[in-house]
Length: 85
Image 1 (cartoon, rainbow, N blue to C red):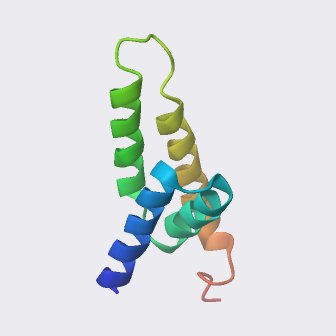
Image 2 (image 1 turned 30 degrees about the vertical axis):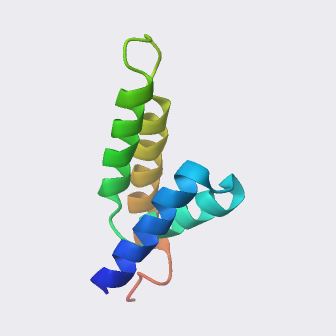
Image 3 (image 1 turned 90 degrees about the vertical axis):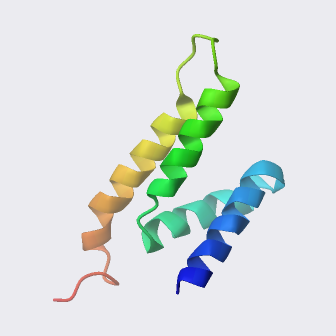
């Protein structure tokens, strides 16, 4: 189980850097729904801090990832996969 999570996260990281976006985004959303996904937020913060240092712009990667995580955690109980009733 942990091996699968590490492999999927590694694929997400590689696709984020060099892969096509139409494969990266669905895999990222799937990763966030399957796992907690807070490490994705840390990666977004690192990307924003590296590329946006001293530019005065908003940290869009961190904001978008935070919204995605909040939405995923809100939606998770409403999905039939996680609903035990």
